[in-house]
Structure formats: C-alpha cells, structure tokens
Image (cartoon, rainbow, N blue to C red):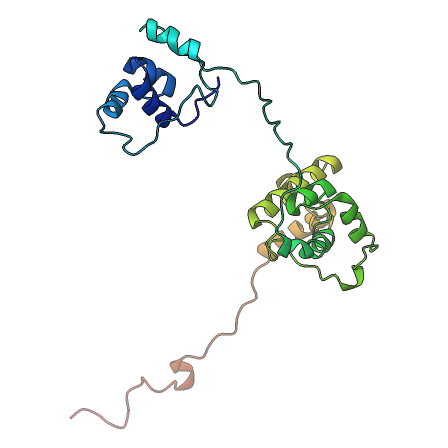
Length: 240
C-alpha cells in the first residue's frame, strides 16, 4: 500500500480545510484520533505548515467530497502514474576516491596470502573488477612493478570481520571440494603407531624386568663394625 507523504502536515491541512472526522483523518495519516484532536486544539504540530494532498496528487477532490458526505467512509490514496524507481541490483561496493589507488595492493595481498578466495569474493570485498584481479595475479597490471601487497583491512577497503567471513567460506568450499575430513577424526601419523611386534617385545621386556630380583645393595657398616669394643666394660676396673 502506498504511504502518505508528510502525514502530520497533511493532517494539519485536512483539519483546517475539510469537515472530515478525526477518525477519518487519523486513518489516512496513520495517527491516533486523539492526536488529530490535539492538532485541532493547537496542542500538537505547532508551527507545521499544512500540506494540500490534492495539489501533490495524493488525494482527489472527489474522494475528499465523498468522505465528507459519509463520516463512516475511509479515504483512499490516489494511485500515481509516475513510474516507480527500479531497485538497483547489488554491485561492487563504493570506494572513496582517495582509497581507489590502494585496490591493486590489496588484491596482490589477497592473491598471495589467501589463494582460496575466488575472484567474486575479492571483488565484493574491495569493490573491484575481475579483469583487474586477473591482471594483478598474472603480473600484467600496468603498475605491477610498483605494487606493494597490503591487507585490505589495513588500507580501509573492508573490515576484519568481512575478510574473516570470506576466508572461512573459502576454506569450507575447498574442504567440501577436496573431501577433507575434520581434524578430530583424522588418524594419527603412521610414524607414531607402533607395530604389533614392537609392542609385544616391549611388553616382554617390561615383564622380565619386573620379575627379576633386584641386585642386593652393599651393606652399610654399623657402629659395632667400626668399634667392636665400644660397648664392653673395662676389666681393669673392679668394683670395691
């Protein structure tokens, strides 16, 4: 449904120049009837100049007269014969003139550091064209010798979040194409897996070592061994 242009200004004009009820004006202007009454009392929309809906083609005089004669009737907005603007398809994003010279550097950085990104993704990220991407990749760009690869985030052509999302999508696409399995389910490297014969030999060696008696450690000398007569009484001394 077509919406009314400048509803409060239209309501002001209808209050001043018609005999429509507050309900009819509120229904047309998408306002509550109490707000329309406040406009009529001068409490709301003070200083707003009324807008004639007949002059700007939003309402016909016949429609206004019809609803003035019938308080229950509802106003219908006139259909305009002016062609509606066509929605513009989403294309390359706009880049300020001051940053357009940084696009080849950003393309060179992504081609070198993110080879999984497609030309379409690069084009959407920094607002460039596929021929430019191809020229930078093939080193046929007119300024190829002076290009300095720089991150598009660094030069302000896109945000870090946008670049991260594009890299994640590219990684998922490559993973799906190559049929890679998740890292959690990947088997361990062959070098880390012991052969059955090695495991058996290791188990036998451990069992033999556990069953063998320990070699007896040398006995430490005691006080008796060092001084055998230390505890014997002196025979030269006899009790009296």
